[in-house]
Image (cartoon, rainbow, N blue to C red; front, side, top):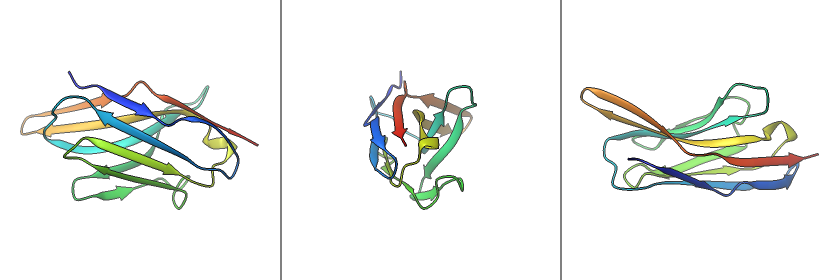
Length: 119
């Protein structure tokens, strides 16, 4: 059973920074991607950042230039550095891991960590 454990959330003032980390338990092979999603109250969960094999990264325009994802897929670890935070970044942030084998794709989620940005 794959378990993802996030850490690093908290309360910060607008313009500040936070660093989120995620570690997967156990020995996991065939990790194709890891990433971060967030969900604000009353809104759908949205994608924030992704890192794929070969350390390719991608971000939506809402966080591009402010957030940086890094990680080691072989070790199933990922970090999200969040700078220049805004009140609209307030949400529960979830770590995500995607495993791909020859005939199967599985997605795993962490329990979430709260990020609150005050104005």
